[in-house]
Length: 274
Image (cartoon, rainbow, N blue to C red; front, side, top):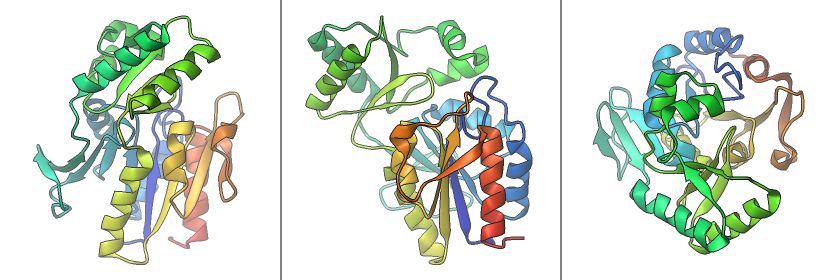
């Protein structure tokens, strides 16, 4: 990192088009960041397995955060081992230490108590994931390899059912969030928790580092609130998630990847990085 900026970004609906999962105009912005040595750190509800494929497709070798903060992965070649980290393949990993099976059991118990039927990612086939999301089958298979948080759908969902289920999940000491396509249950973590860990690592190397974050949904709020330059990206219908709005938030004019490109251009000009 030669410039004093680190960018955190959500994937689906932000860096990637919400429907096609293609980067479009954001690809040139990623290349611009790479040329200027600005780390772009992917922060997503996606599984580690799927994020590794996305990183390969987009030629990204920065750290990344999977499953809404469940896992933080730092390339061993670029970072020393943080306190409490374990070695997984070519990464230092700071990870939530509860078994995913236990998380699923809490979800199913909460649903039973609420009298609501749910289907977990463990119960949904890769073909069903593909049909629900538009992901190709390769990505859908990788999306199902959950380690920390469990994605799920509510059968015959209504606002009342969701409210009741959220209350039951909270009563068991777990958290609920919603991403682009699915509901999620998770332990005591979120995107902001892991982003804060990454911030401390970069600040230990350069105390003048500034941080930006981009997202489009409520699961992005925890990370948006703890950076210097937060950006909320517009949705395909040109609206934005009003539940994410707070005073210092920047709302892009562009949708999805166009909003990402807009924010990157603004940041580079604002901080005079080229």
